[in-house]
Length: 434
Image (tube, rainbow, N blue to C red; front, top):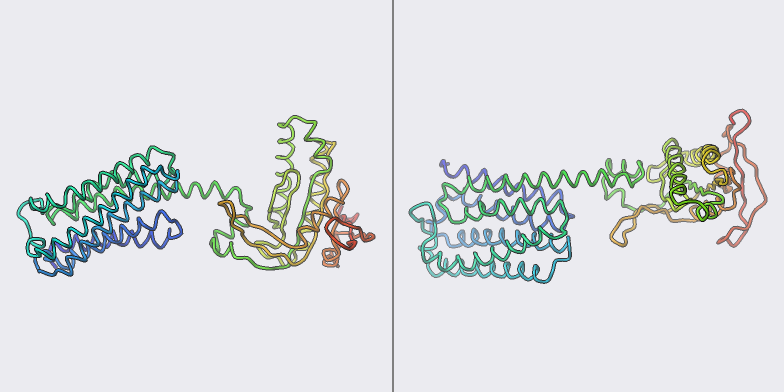
């Protein structure tokens, strides 16, 4: 292997490898795919040059066509990436879209001219030139106007995209590509000796932007994880997004709590006071839910929906839900006595088959629980008096042998949305533990 072949192979492997990494790790991102294809095409072209150092002079028209096609594909997909970034960020003005499309059309024309030149005059097209620039005056006159116009249109479109409200993370990669592009394009026309150096410098600039892009995305992920329950965030971390998104039917317990007298309180109090009370209420709910492995599904004003047994399964979900509900009624009532004595808290529990998983709509994902226990827990919460915990019969039956919890069966009660009266059980702590 010659001294010239080694740098081409090394840089080709690096570039193609970066393309494969992006394609593998960020394939769900529609803006990253064309960028990965661009790097992959450029990398494979470098590998061809490294494998056959004399591919310009061997007279191999097929090899030349493949190399020129990969060269054009690298430029085409790079422009496509810029177009998708602009479209994703702001919808892109029609003039910007037109510039991107025009530049891509010119790249295709450039490829057609190259292949035509190769077929008409293969010896001239594949021969080495003397000097640092490997382009003859004729080739410059034929190709430079087309490729130059394509790159000028793409450069203007990218520059305009950068000053619009494009995504901050993508702006970092676009800026890096804009800086690296002159080096990458210069590598197309200079002597082979300088190509690996120019490609390496351009790739390093771009990779610096890509690393910064990933840092920003990671920061966003950490921020958004605060809007998930700790259990859902942990499940995503351990099993991945796809596993978390899978829907399944399972038996679990649902706890629902809301505040008695909240509507009147919110109407008569300053909004800042209402927000402060809700914040303290949510803090109490969050601490207690975490203690018993509950997942807070929804905050809906003064109502809170908690799942026990999803997304992390719990074999004793009914017992844990009952303990959670009793703590919530006791500690919530204690907190309200010091902050808003006119309010009370009622809690309902129901156990049964529920379908859990994610739904996609309005551009976002929502972890949901659908089933009769969700509705029943909400209705029991509505029926509960201040400081009271009401459970359905299935939850009560699952508490057999749970000494700390007293069960008081009541007459079946009619509940909204249920055709027949529902047996209700009031839960409380035993004297020994309460």
